[in-house]
Length: 87
Image 1 (cartoon, rainbow, N blue to C red):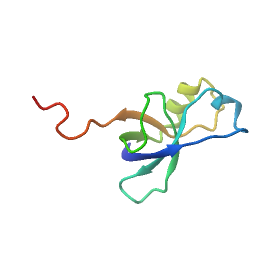
Image 2: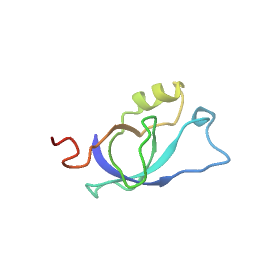
Image 3: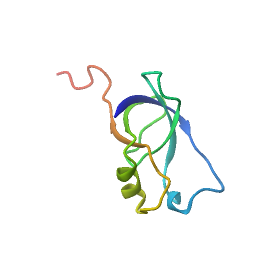
């Protein structure tokens, strides 16, 4: 798992059937040692938002409901802005 920033949406007219109806985003890892990744988002992350992404392919394939899907990266959490929960 690593933190990343959502940079945009993916639009595709041709894609693997397991991605039908799935929201795909571009996530740029903050560590800089991994290139931007296409991630599956079922949490509703917004552009510019910090998220936690995972490269657990089994989890991604479970999200799309296809054991043979090429899915690998997915959004596992949305990071609250610093101080957002301060009282």
